[in-house]
Length: 121
Image (cartoon, rainbow, N blue to C red; front, side, top):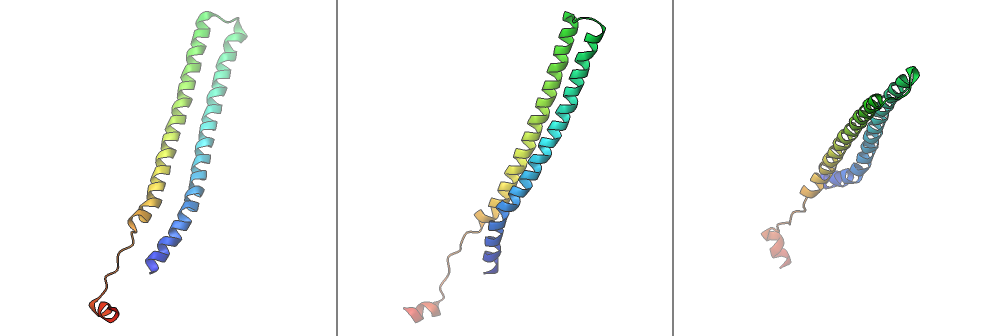
């Protein structure tokens, strides 16, 4: 009886705990992605300003800038996808951890003893 009560309490509490963890993980991933993006965008702006200070744009410099911009964008996209994959993997693991005890806790049929059957029958 206590196992059933514990399972019921855990099944009621587990989604709340899961949501708390989920929000923390999402916030951390969002903060990491924003800080990396800010740093990379600042680097792009600095690299774009430097050529224009000395003289006008050239097609070679413009091509270099485009390549740098593409590299930074690819790096940011890779970070985003990696973070997204990790978060989704963790969320699935948490779902499985929460659902596993619920799925395995099947009610068992009761066996009637002969003395109980004879008394009622």
